[in-house]
Structure formats: structure tokens, C-alpha cells
Length: 319
Image (cartoon, rainbow, N blue to C red):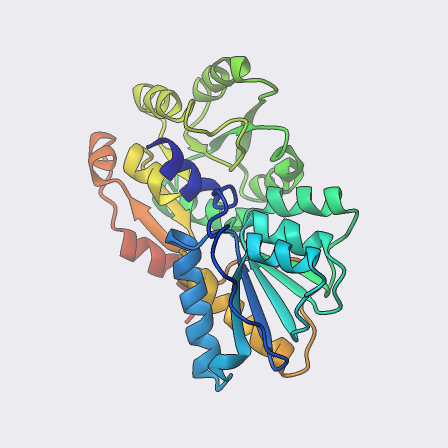
């Protein structure tokens, strides 16, 4: 599952495609320029949902330009930077290109994890603002804890493995868990050799393992052993990718590329109507729950992903 799993989980590290493709001509009437880190899979799905949302709102199709990150980088080198009302960057590579460019139009980054966006901000010397903000892939921690509470109402001990990039979220998780009277059983991983030492410490004293996206902890080399260890310890794992649920996590909470594209279109329309992008990065409004029924049954659980999704939406008073 190697590269495909890593893509589903991180979505910002696909190889650039289209290096030898003639870029789409950019007119002087472009309103939105979509820059994608790739041309297939999640990027294509999100881009299509974004374009469809704009066109349904009467944005002229010829005013929506689609480029790859490689094509955009070439245009910048050639001094042919487009001048739209808004750039939408899909994925880490596209965000990196636009964050490093000197352009007056605002940039909305989508299909990007929080840790990747924050790293790009640091590398480019910028801060999140209405000129450069993000629509995160990550599900907010309060939503993840609400899902755990729905499935395991008696759980009181929450296990977490932190890596260097995810550790900044620990204070937020501690505060949310304290409000629910949960104990957080955690370990910090600084190297691959420490993963399973920390995992054993966490599993020995946890009711549920919450997987927080961090490539130092969860990657194609470590995933199967983490899942197997959690299953043997009979500690259910809640993951952040449907691929993880298919691989052996009990369930996952995640946003689909199409859902991200729809929300990005709504934010883009705000800009086209004269409103600025939000200064602070935005959480995903929509989401999906994926259940692994085989693992759930083995752990004595009967779960329905659609029922769980609707229950979460009711808790958040979403339509």
C-alpha cells in the first residue's frame, strides 16, 4: 500500500506531473487560478468539485485557469505570473510555489495538512493572513473526540503518539480531554526506533488510540506494525485516513477531496464577491466516517459509518 497509502494520508507529497505539458494559456480575464500539485486522484477530484462549484455560481468557465505546480513555477521564472482575483493551491507543492512567489492576489491553500502548511509558512518567512491561508485536511480535535465519545462512551483513557510536527497540538488535546474528564496517555517519538517503545507504553494504559497525522510516527514503514500491536492489545485505533481504516484501524474520520473542493469554492466565491479570505486557517465543514467492519466485529463492536456521520453532524448542528 506504500505510496498510495502515503498519498491518502498526507496528500501533499505526490510527485509533480505534467512537466512536459504545454501550459494552458492564461487570459487577462482570469478570475481564479487553480494550481495543483498533481493531475490525478485526489487533486483531480478536488479541482473538479472546485470548478463545478464556481461555474454553478455563474463564474465564467473561461475565467477559471488550471495549472500544475510545475507550470506555475515555469511561468514565475519567465515573468508570466497570472493576475487573478484569487489563487487556489491544491497540495503542498502548489502551496510552496505560490508562497514563495511575489503576487498581489490572495492564496487559498487546500488539500494540505496543518503541519505541511505551517512548515511552508516557516520556510517562506510568512504568517497566515487573508493573503495566504489554508483549508486544512485535518479534522479538528474536538470532532475526533466527539466521535470517540459516541462509539466508546465509557472510555476514560486516550492514547496518543506524538511526533515532532504534531506535538504542537498536545496542549489543545489536553484541554479538550480535561473537559471530558479523560486522561491522556501519551508518548513522544523522536526517531523510528522509539515508535514501538512509546506505543507499548501508550497501549498498556489506554482505552482508545487516537492517531494524529505525523509522518515521523505514521508512515508506510510503521503502519502495519502499529495496527497489529493495537489489535493484539485490543485497543481500537481511530485514524485520519480511509486507507488506515481499510488497513486495520477500527474507523477513520476524514474529509474527501470533493468535499474539500466544494468548501474551497465557497471561500473563493467570497473573495470574488469582495470579501477577504479568513486570516486563520479554516477547518473542514464536511467529513466522512469510514468503518472497518471486520476489525469492529473482532473487537465486539457493531458500527455504522452513516449513522456515526449523522450523529456527529447533529452534534455540530450541521445540515
